[in-house]
Image (cartoon, rainbow, N blue to C red; front, side):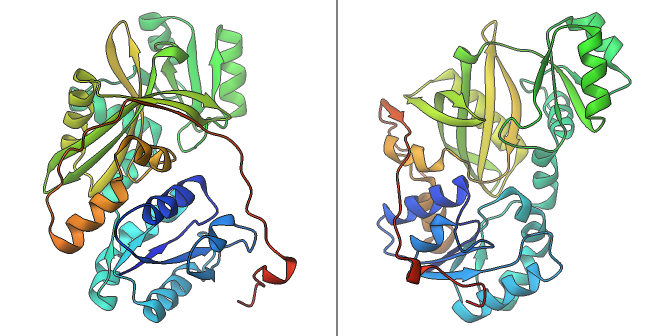
Length: 324
């Protein structure tokens, strides 16, 4: 078996690679990234340097790699690549006989835009966060008051997220970031959770919920256990979203209610953590897609995961050159 993982230097890509290495798939791992200093390039078996996703040559180079390596499965490892893979999934699968773990363009679009996320959740009767776009903030303030959250409609890792306590702060945030979404501040950092779901054929078959602590927008401590009603809530949301395979839901409890504030239509930055709780979602997805094995909810181990820095040390002579 051969699996291509792009975004080998990203937290997401690294988690996918580690999940493959700890699985029973015995896969040859082809890895790709624009930077020769992407650590995941040196964890895989066959490395490729590719252009950035916004480079006109990006997709052509992806096709060259897939044609040369003929992977059984392709897994995008960064957000910025999702739109291209979603748009060209049918072409890639028909042309090269591979399978791409990517959701439909509709799911990718909803998950990529925080405003569309909030609209989707509200329209489907799911646990949404009251939200508005600039220009409608006075109605939102009249309904929920302060504090509020201002964040980019398209963003990641909490970059550009601001907590707002007054009209003046709100106007300054909007002036600075006009393409933003304004939301009620819900819950507390102590009631924040991240969840992973696996959905095929219109049904979410497995999930894992972890309470988490954040640092610089990423989960650096996670607490996994079966959460019962919380699992049921994210499984319902995942079934309605109807992703192809993995999806990630981030939410807070607000007076006991689940309030989802972010959806990712892909594996997530906590994919590499979940496998330690007995939830190797990468392996489960591949086994279902390639071997038609059913997705069965694994028993989630009650574990605490503490992330820390580590090192991959290379001789300078082993670094990839751009021409490689």
